[in-house]
Image (cartoon, rainbow, N blue to C red; front, side, top):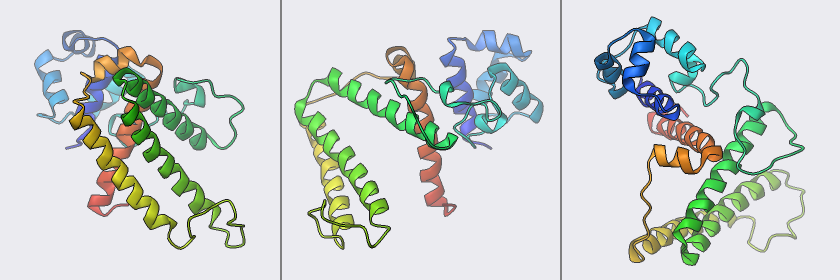
Length: 222
């Protein structure tokens, strides 16, 4: 049974503010059956999969968690909401889409940090994200061995391990700050969709893509 399908159809229904009763009536099935599909208790047939794709105007691949793009045939970079203004974007479509997913999700994270109001937590999260970007940039930069290393102060042979260790420590510090200062926010998919209307779609897609990628590592498919 596909594990993504129940979660995705539940998210799409809630995203549109629809009740199970309304969706079930629109699709010609009982509310109980729809509830079973959303909970993953029963597996739907191909006819229902296609009907659901048409109802929510998404692709079957999206419903099955095989792609983060809702409609592969017609998606454009403008289909992903902006949380910040992005102009003059270059590169192929997947480059543009991933850039907006990351940019919008980062904006949501810092909006949440602003609501929490902890300078220590914001600094720790910022250090973690900066280290991740530093590691990626330097790895790409150093792929050409003749490139000058004058802009870097950490030895080329050691930066990967040192940076990875620093990120692990930052993550531990983030957890420690949250626990010691009792920093919590009551959140749910519904509240995120309400408060972060422009960034929520990117955040949900990033979560879906990341978890599929992580599961791939454990299953040996990556």
